Image (cartoon, rainbow, N blue to C red; front, top):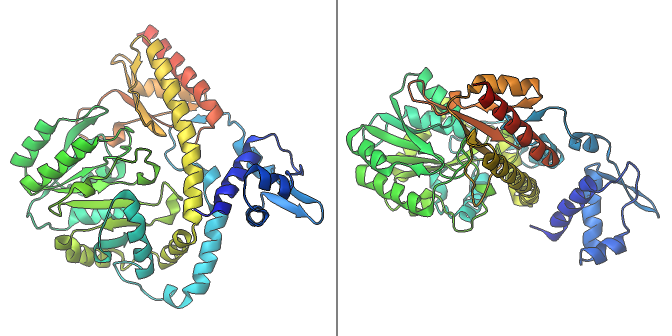
Length: 451
């Protein structure tokens, strides 16, 4: 990431956290240059970018001043603590950056935007995506990369199309991604589940299913599982890849949160795949914004032509404007700047959430349990005591201006559910997390007393 972009992030944080008021003057260019040990030209470039984003304004021969207004209101504590929202924090959406990229895309690719593209996707986007995938230790050829209209489209196509192994059933972790579950059940596709918990998966059970059932592919979220928040170990990923090769079962690896990984040694299952049995999926919805509807699928050679055919028949191509804007966004370095910013915000919130839940779980006397993680994430879950009715608890918390969500829709209809509540802090102010968890714990304790 360019130095001036890193500086922009730090100055934005300074404006957000420090008690600046509308119209208050920032330190001088010389002072900032000394403070951040960089050239005055770098400071000026960063300040000019912030001015274009309407966060500051310049007064000739005077300096730069803060425009806080709307941004300040957005950062104030909300009367409602929303631990149920899974969408990215709207306060860190790169609205202005992406607006610039859309305008630039229209100018740059004007002839290409008004004709149909290809089912595979824009070649210039695929080129830069291939390089970006290397960051996650996903090394592949451009011929294997497809641009899709979100990971949901890729999952729908994979579920519908025939596979070389000639098998029919989809195996899915329980709990798992609710929209894919809904898709499979609505279309009455053959699907079975296998339990996943914070401690992992029963590999003996998994191997038995691979061996005896007609499993076409196993859908998994190895990293920051949604909605559990846990990850597989490197050893478990290697074992999954070996089982897939042994029993001719494909693995669909949904690595939609790869950008938030803190463990440098945590490679995807794809890295362990020596038999081309892993299909790798990557989304940009959680890191940029959901409405972008652009995802990436890395498809093995033996599946590529069938996938292309089904993709073409499904929507001809993904939005050319979105593809062109994303290509400019990635190539310009804006994505790296945004990633550094959102990772910093989410990491701080994840640590607060983990600390608060660990403390309250220890004090709860068994009313609920929480599994601490070495690398906590922004979403996680708690296991309630079996006597606590989840829906009544959620309703009571809502009356106390705290929003939670059960995991009912994250399970197949016929799969036994655990008494789990999920928590997501992406839309909770960092300073409000501890207060919210303390209140949740108090209501849980009260529910135990009443039963």
